[in-house]
Structures are given as structure tokens and as C-alpha cells.
Length: 156
Image (cartoon, rainbow, N blue to C red; front, side, top):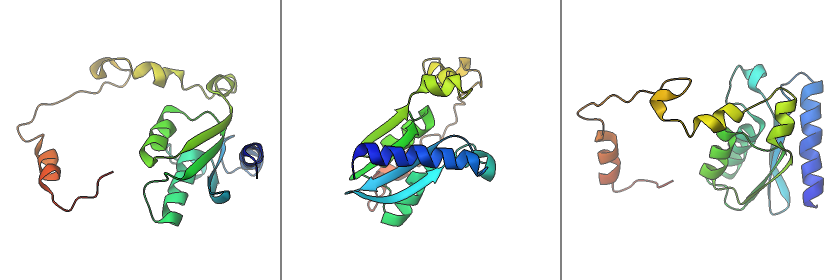
């Protein structure tokens, strides 16, 4: 199957997601060596979970199916350019490549505007719309010290 056909399936899934009342206008699928291993639409409102974007849901399903937290040999096809949260998950899961149909400007025109998040990344934490305040505790680095000393850790 071609990249266009997989991407068309993601678009069709997004439309189906809206029409069935499952969630927002987003669909994603993950393919490994030409086989679809996971697919999902957006489930934010259905699950009452702001992290249940189509890409995140597909990544979760693919990781469970492959019994691995890395998707290095997999390709993500998604109906829209991934938002900042999904972009982070894409990098953390080590996906090989991403194909998308609409971009962030198309999403913004449909009232799904994430531009403020992209903007917030450049703002110092304490000055963001949601203030993020660092407290200096004496043993704040203890978790990292424990990790550094752990001999049987699984790196990710």
C-alpha cells in the first residue's frame, strides 16, 4: 500500500470519528513494514482525557501490541500535523517517520489553534500563562541520583 493510501485511511478515520460522535476530527494509524498495527481517532471528549489525541492513542495501542515502548521501525500517518504534545510523544516513541495531511494552520481555521503552546515554549517557565514555579528543595536531585546509580535500569 502507498503512503497516500495509508494517509487517506487516517483522514477517513477522522471523518468517521466525527460522524460517530467518538471525538474530534483527527485520525491516526501506525504502520510497520506495510501492516497497520494500530489506529485510533481522537478520544478527548469521549474519555474525558485531554491527552487522548489520535496520535497518542495510536502510539499507546502500537506499543502494547509490539510490547515495546519504542516504535523505531514504524510510520505514523495522521490526518493533521501533530500538536506539541503529540510531537513530544512521537520523538519519545522513536517513530521512524510521520506523514500528515492538514497542517496546524488548517486546524486553527477549524478552531483547533495550538499556536499559543508553540509560543509558550519560548517563554521562561515563571512567565508562562500557567506559571511554572521551581522550588529549591535540598533533596530535589535524589531521584536522578537513584537513577544514575541503578545498575539494571532500562534506558529510554
